[in-house]
Image (cartoon, rainbow, N blue to C red; front, side, top):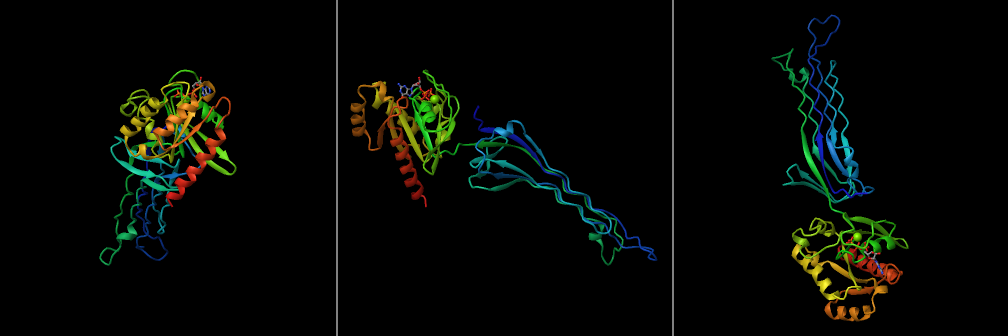
Length: 332
Ligand SMILES: Nc1nc2c(ncn2[C@@H]2O[C@H](COP(=O)(O)OP(=O)(O)OP(=O)(O)O)[C@@H](O)[C@H]2O)c(=O)[nH]1
Ligand SMILES: [Mg+2]
């Protein structure tokens, strides 16, 4: 499944119902007073976050959302019925932007957060409203308010707890496939992964969401390779899991390349908690030496793993869980 992270949708509220002009018809009363009711309100269109949604995929099939009009007012001072509002469910983490993407209308970060994107037109006033001591049989009324419509962009940054980063071919997708039930594409060439893939990792009753993103290369922050588009996806991760292939002798260099990209991209990526996983140790005779070098180079936690031979994966999950709990507690 292709990961869809930006969609354009059209929203149109309903018009208000018109006010009514009507006069009472009663026996023995020649000129009954006004009794035209007000019109009902048109539907508003409301976005609401829902925690069971992870993608914007549903919007591929439905892009137009149109509200119903309010009912017109009626005689005997009956108000027209309001049209029902339309609720559009979106995943938590979706941003709603104007058509030209210059303004963020709402950042939907909470569960069940609501945002009224277009309000239904108000109902018009019936002639009863215009009755006064000087005008006992008014014929005035007002029309229901018009509807409003607009195009908006929905943009979703994946909210994963952990983002797996590294050069192409480092073994990121293989790792995700081993620690979660996700099935990302795996192959022995760079840029196998073209879109972020999410997986849920479970350890006892603890769960966290891990995002596997396409490989980064030098210049990624300015759009090289698959570019900075995917760095945006890890902005909200609490932890970065940085994979460095020990099958390649330039371990420190390769590590630094990615760190530099994070730094140049900005947005606090460099200061995020990082766990380093030296990968594919089944292929390397020197991984212990690389680990020692790395320990001198950085204070961040280093774990050696082989996804193929299932080495170090439990330790990696435990360590990630521990750090996630730490990070969560920090923010309380
Ligand atoms: N020997 C060995 N090979 C591995 C291991 N993990 C991954 N590989 C191989 O490395 C190659 C790349 O793996 P992927 O998981 O596709 O790498 P990636 O980092 O997701 O690559 P991109 O999506 O292109 O960035 C594949 O041929 C994998 O089979 C491992 O632990 N040991
Ligand atoms: Mg991959």
